[in-house]
View 1 (cartoon, rainbow, N blue to C red):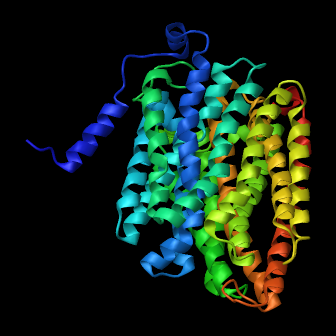
View 2 (cartoon, one colour; view 1 turned 90 degrees about the horizontal axis):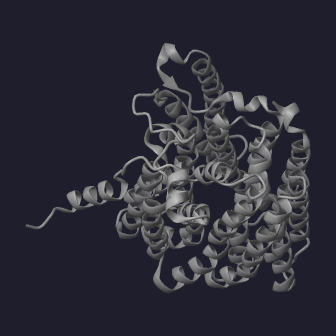
View 3 (cartoon, rainbow, N blue to C red; view 1 turned 90 degrees about the vertical axis):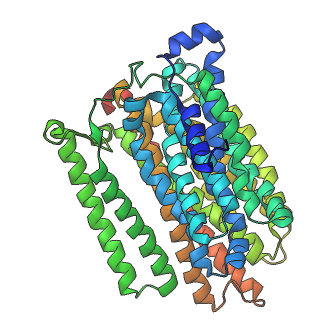
Length: 510
């Protein structure tokens, strides 16, 4: 008898997420030997690579998708924005999911959802289903991304955490670094659908490894507690509505200009939603018995000054990172007139050098103050944006590549150091919440950064009297891009002020 497709998918998910007897880190280390912790890190690294690749690589396919579905660039951009909203909000659920279902089931289920989203998006013939697939991928990516930082702090000794963080970051950064290059080639050769299928092999490999190496326990080595506090659905709803209003408001502001009443109304609702969310989380933190709900965001992590400053750095850094990820391909394709594949090729050397820098930074992070590494990285990133603003129509491709490489070296100094410097001062029970919150802040900053960079670019284009689609006045169009890069440099300078506060000793941060 032929099994229906729905039952086949359900059976696959049940099989891949089925929980075996309780297996802790210590039990699995005895089974697989002293190198087990690196196999564990590789398992979650592959899945995180797949999730991050799915978040950034879609940018090179947006023009193709807009043509295929015959829609405006703004509506096409929602394949990226919808993903970001889903990912940002779902990050807050990771601590609750881990405590209730354990590491393996939470991680494997998320990977299955990412896999199904990739396959579903690639096979869809309707744009609405493409959006559904992207939201599914975003939900999975959000749950997965805080998990590696938690496992690194629990599975590795303090003198190994820098190396573990650099190994993990090297692999994770290769995804968005090499992704646009491969993605550009795939879009040119096979069309936009190939972008969705890119996550399939990584997701499959990660699911297989997770069933072998990821422990089934919850944080702290405890058994998953199915009878614990319920998920804060109200908090999720408030966070989702607020984030949607924020991004919609920013998009409306970009399209309609600074006098758009509708846009400012959405932004006011978003600000009010943020205030309500904070008050609600404060209520749940101090009166958990009254509601039986676990707060999505444990606000007590912000009592630690180093963590608070790290979260601020993560937000601004996320805005700059994702904003530049949005601007750079657009700059090269619309500003310079290059093809998607040529754009990806130009970005490839910088991505590879970024991976090398991260590998070296991990060893430095075990021996030197992390705030110095983070601050140095932000300074280099700001400098690269300033130098980007010096380019003009006759500039050589090599100068552009050099300034991008400089910025990627800065990123390589930041990535392995920021999480560890922010989380080390937290008590061990707060580490899952801290990892979730700092990832949430970075991704929220990224979601805001993309829209804000688009607004700044649109504003500067209007000031110069040109548009992205115009075929003449290339010099004026490049000036608008250059001024947008100066804006990003100012953002990084602001983050640098907060990064310097990461030097606060851990005992005074508590």
